[in-house]
Length: 378
Image (cartoon, rainbow, N blue to C red):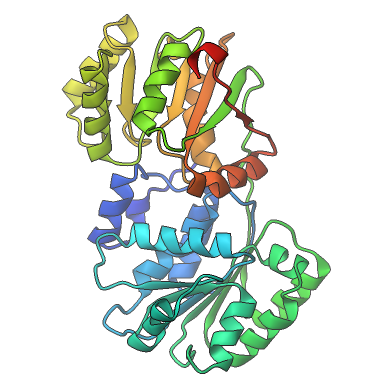
């Protein structure tokens, strides 16, 4: 569980950002988010020593979205990443949380970037994301201009140095203004990275991620990669074949998804109900009481809606939508953590989400087993 007294609405975010945060079930920032967001909003340089999968990406995405001048279609922020996969992941998070900022544009620069995509550099973009070598090439080609750049983020900086990007990073830093804000995020701090930080950070605030992402050994964690089979069919198949199934919490990202999925489960004959952040208190208590007594077997909810829910008969936690970080995954599993109780946590993961699954595994330092259905159900 994340022990943190702050809430996202204390950061002064716009109504558009807060609306998206509430939709995605985010109310309380993780430890690293609470530590990083205020100094980044204030314009300070930052050195964050934190694991992948702790909510680190939102630590810089949210303050950048909050401080961009959307009326200016000049690159104002740039995020350097170690791989094309990370580039796309970061760009997707930017786009996701800018859902209600229609003027916003992020451009990922990766190996499959087409001529049509790169035209956006001349038309204007607020944030560019890419590996140092690809970003350097665009700067050298005079397609990407840094004269309006306000913030530079080095994401997974230790990994970028490990794969040999140090010269490219130093070259890019040399093209930027000494007055810009720079933030470095890394899981480890080797000497080479500390030297780089000394060279490009000005009076940085240093943050250390201290969250523990431990899961009780009695909890069995598994994932099922969903291919051609729909998530709904996968979910109902799981419910049919899982041994020891009594009651389940099924997590989705948005209010609309809770209502839609609960309705579809009821149509298939399951006793299911929805909980979201807007559920009236009286109805919430009624649903929880029915869940406790066995009148309802499945509750579909967002992370925020299920906060502080205590129902001891829960045997399964199913992430219909993959959590955004390891802290959220551990928080969900916490609903299984009753004395002497074994439980099962299952994630439904698409091919595009496998990178996020691996990030969660690295942050927890645990491997999540692949789910194998009994032969008669395959």
